Image (cartoon, rainbow, N blue to C red; front, side, top):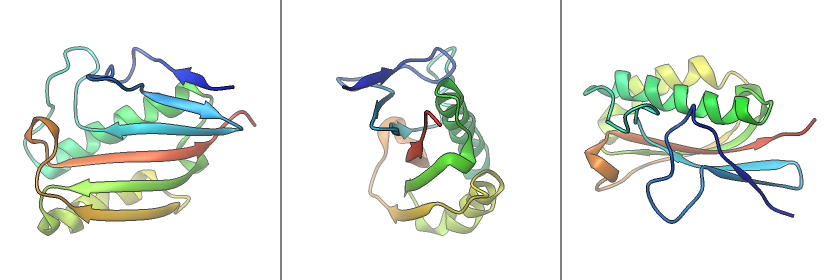
Length: 126
């Protein structure tokens, strides 16, 4: 059975998708961009500020399932400019201390012109 993730502490889905789905003890969270959960506006104009907001959004999703960053088993990271990798990675490393498996790629564009997006899979329901 699929259980849909829904929390007001992370940005609402802005299309035909959910914040996440939990199945068989794994939470598959949709990609998070640096949106304010309260206003839906982009937060920050630097890679550092936007990455911090993305991490706040991921934290909210994890907490909604009784999990934290150490429960994440896989992330996929998207950067609008690979030159931002160092600054992004510095902030990413503060949160994902469990060192989950990861992919990180540069893409041509991201929604709303943001600089980064991160999706993750976490073990939940311990």
